[in-house]
Structures are given as structure tokens and as C-alpha cells.
Amino acid sequence: MHEEVQMVLDICRERMEHALAHLDKELVHLRAGKASPRMLDTVMVLYYGNNVPIAQVSNINTPDARTIAIQPWEKSMIHPIEKAIINSNLGFNPDNNGEFIRINVPAPTEQRRKDMVKQVHKEGEIAKVSLRSARKDANDNLKKMLKEGLSEDLEKDAEDKVQILINDFSKKIDKMLEDKSHEILTI
Image (cartoon, rainbow, N blue to C red; front, side, top):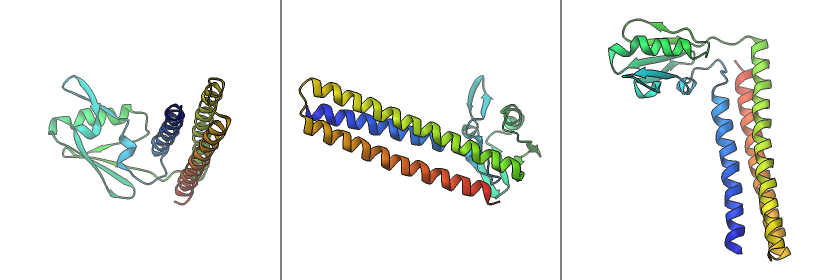
């Protein structure tokens, strides 16, 4: 029975870690006005008939806080990369000089920054709903195991461990939201 309880706790932790990773991925796409190569993570480029991530056909870096520079590994890829960036709906306007592509990341307006902070908190709430769902599923499984012969003490201890997990992950989410909101508002 102890192994089954540990398995429930491990699954719960795994789901909470997944929620945190998903939140991190979503927050990267909210532009704070500071350039980051990760802003292009979702851009897919047509390369010899296959859609591949832009990072697999070019070198991406940030020479300064407002610029993303993309250097294709093959010169023939400049136009497909430029087209993929334009079609990505990220709102970027790439500048192609024939050698590499430069993207200027404009500073968002005050209203846009406030809207982004609202979006940050919305994403945070989605992550917290995922945490609560993981907790509910874990506790439901523990109740089921209680009916199947698990001792009440073990069930209670496991529920306490699940609560500790959700408290820890909630703090991590709050810290991520606070950091991202601060990053967005201080430009």
C-alpha cells in the first residue's frame, strides 16, 4: 500500500511540475519589451519540405535589449525564415539585409503593459487551477485507497503531503507572476 500512496504523490508532483513548466512557457511569449531568443520558440520554418523550429535552421541571439538577430546557417533560408516570422502573428517586423535578419522589439505602451500584466495573472490562475485539479485527483485516489484498506493515518499523512506540495507550487507560481509583472511594468 505504501508504494501505491507514493505513486499517487509522485503523479501529483509530476502534474504540478507540468503546470509550472507550462506557465513558464506561456509567460515567455508575453513580450515585456526586452528581446529574448525564446520569443521565437513557436516560429516554424519550412525547410526541405518539413516545418522545423527556427532554432534548427539558424543562430538566434540578442545583441542588445531591444534587438533579436537571426543568422541562418544556409543563405537560402533567409526568405523562408523572414516569411515564417511575419506569418507567426507575433507582431514582429523583420529586417532582412541579405546576410541576417534583425528584429527590433518595440517598447510596449503603458496600456499594453497593463493588459500584459492582466494576461500574466490569467495564465497564473490557469496554472493554479491545474494544481487544484492535481490535488483533487490525488485526494480522490487516497480516499479510494482508504476504502480498500489503507489506514486512516497513512491517508491523512498523504493528504498533508499533497497540501504541502500545492503550497510549495503555489508559492513558485506567485513568484513567477510577480517577477514577470515586475519585468513588464519596469521598462
